[in-house]
Image: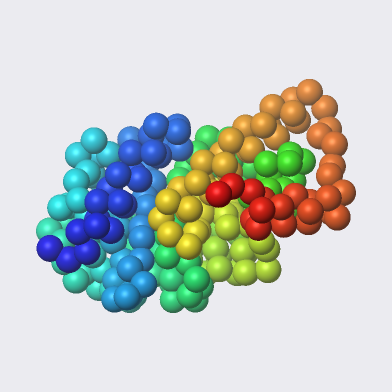
Length: 216
């Protein structure tokens, strides 16, 4: 079996999506790219999260061709592959329809950077890209075009949901979780009034500290 460790990691990380209320039923997916072979491990299409195993993960090449697997790959595979081909540093991608972030997406509206946590993780607002249909590379094109000029590893897609990226699959899951957490905070704040802005210079300082000093 190809890439057993990456299969195990991607399968295990899928459990974090329902655990953190980021998905409903079979929606959402995670992929991880092996930097040595370039092969991608991705969720099989339409399979319930409780039924996912390392063995039923699907391995595809950078063009989305199945290299190993008994199931159809996720319907978002072409877009995952497009992102990987155009963002060489990305080795993990997560797609969700998480509730609060998707509410912003239905308005075509970015999530403004009004919390220190967003400054830390995203270095600014979480941008929102345009609309694209599912099944081809179009969503991947929107994701790349939307985040290429932002520090944010994640973005919203109009009327659709969230795509989050990372230098590995776990980092992408983290970005997706923090995206939804802050979307919920900002949505709640908007029910009370207008959230206070953070000075861009302070956002830069927050981002630099978190990315370069925080942690072990």
